[in-house]
Length: 143
Length: 361
Image (cartoon, rainbow over all chains, first blue to last red; front, side, top):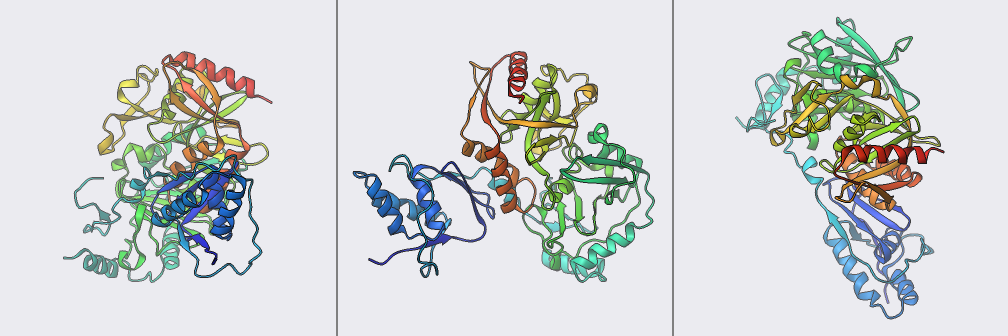
């Protein structure tokens, strides 16, 4: 079976982990996300260049009885949809990339939490009109 | 006339001599040399950031843009290398060349992308109609507006936040969107989005004897012995809570934000003895209003990072990727707690003071 690889959608996607949990921020539009458990393990390994099949295989081996493949694929679809991930056109040059991070405590929790409350700070319409003095102001006269 | 055509016209007329961001900065810098300065003050932040020699073009500007941090200013001899100027046209007579917008760009949050570079920062703040410039290598910056008297109080409550945030791209200190209170044992960083209770927690602690470092922005100096540095001695509070928080004797002004009519900026000069310049950072807390409070319980660090990072990263345009990583390191290195704030402000403050004492190493 062909392996599939993913990478962060762009350099605007920044991510940090603590204790196996993840916060992901799109610094271009202000959206941010969190993952923990199996979802965080999947994210951290995919962006490190490990194939989806390798990560799913490891989780399925560790958590027999959970439908890891379905949940993992659904999360990847969601990560693609919100433009945090894109599929890599080719395998990473280093095919020896190993799984990283501690396995989660269970094979559950692939939930991606999404937050958009910071977007308004970035979505302020930047320029509307330039007044006679040469400085911009908003057309509606508000501050 | 279409805006783009107006920008082109204005740009061509206004600033024909500046063909690049570096030329514009150089033009401004040359014009500052020898410009009459009416008042000077210095501010210093330990090892967090370079000390800054702040120059005001008029006494009006010094009162308007220097009042919020006057008790944090300090004598630095000789004057610091890093210069920052507050100038305007109406009270200090400084006429700044307007910017050729069509070629220098204008992006979200007022970033003037054509003026920006690895070591230069430039923002037009539409709300306060102010231009902020900083050159990290040449070690100077400025804030310019048309009329100092027209600057809204939300701007004058933290007039140094842009240069401080930008200096953090190169120095250890980080401007964070958080409050902080403490005592001789140290201080807690109070983290949360706007409206989460940062100000109420900070000001109730102040009202009941704790030291105050800020309720909205403070500077965190990371390291083996992390510290919090104060940046302003103002607070933002709802008008209907001024009396409850013991601030009725303090000068306060309407914030000046259209969708925030109820908020006031309070100058805490009556609490001068409780203003702390810096304190060791002992813990990070996230306030949460609870009818059964006060109580404090551990909080997951990733949840604290989620409360601190987005709110800090999107306030001011900085190197967000680098700051995110540094915030993560600070959160990971500190104990993190949820502070369930109860209905009795004094009980909350006493509880927090005892908590701080228990944290002292």
